[in-house]
Length: 448
Image (cartoon, rainbow, N blue to C red):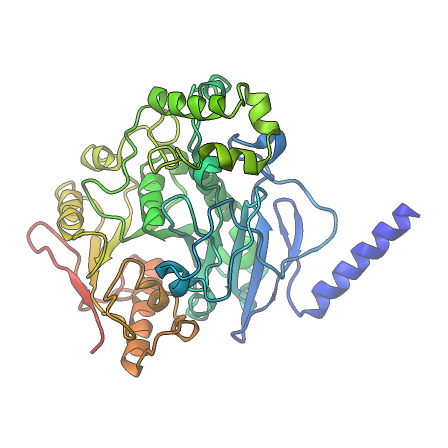
């Protein structure tokens, strides 16, 4: 009876997949089928697991291989986002980016989403690929926020991947008991290990979607930009990154420090867990998520809930890796906004000049200074997101034709960079010049 039911379920899944008109793809874990996106000619795959659920004995462990499934997975809904504190209704970022309501969160959160041209699925199309890492101070956010969408990227011939990764105390807790279980005696950084695992998934599976595993751009904003800095610094992502975009994450100099010591973080983590009566790793892993959040709510901080240097994943700071010429030697696009979290331009220029002095590949810098219509918030931190995902129509703001034209221009710049390593396009000596020591050029992005 059970066997018969399984056969019927598998047959039903196959019928749904075939009925959607999309290819059934073989990826790590099993077979998957996407659904037509809003944009004709684009297929979206939502909620694909790229690692095992980090629950139970896998809580506070580095990501493990995905658990296989038997039937065709119909990837028609986004996976749940990482455990995080809710954005407060009425707060600025809630009103700005959470227009569809509160996100659904769960400890089982290691999912990614893929937008691809339908015509490329299952073919050796070798399209460029871009993997987006969301921001949120390492304590909030998800890969399917209202501003993020891959339709405009796919229509321009670039496959877009967005990811979730573990956040806050669930993603970055250090603890001496956890450190003792690791061969390098370093705990924490689980959220960054998730990002590396997602990148490896893209490298290993994106050809099924028509993507080129040898042309992967990683990009992110805010803590996502800091994450890109960590990825291009990490020996674990060596050979997987072909280009990088760093948005509002600073350049050289202080942004989100990674140089806190393991011993200090272990001590803080142990103190928090001990005070909650969770005195062993076994007890910590058996505790409910709410117990963990309650234990950390008055003592959780950016220091405890963000990446730090360790011998395996992030052996040196971004600044040191830059000066020591240890970064991935790829093209970089890096910039900030007019009303950002401080003036990031000096550090961005220093980064470009150091790269140029070392004879590395070009660095393109930008300054987004469109003061968004609708209020006096200006060109605030995150303001560019609506533009470079071409999702202005989802926002409440009264965008003008000039805003839509700016979005089209930025979409061209971003996707050209993903395709060719040059925002102007292939073999084009356009208006956006590399930033060099001799000519520290900064591209202004604003309405005309």
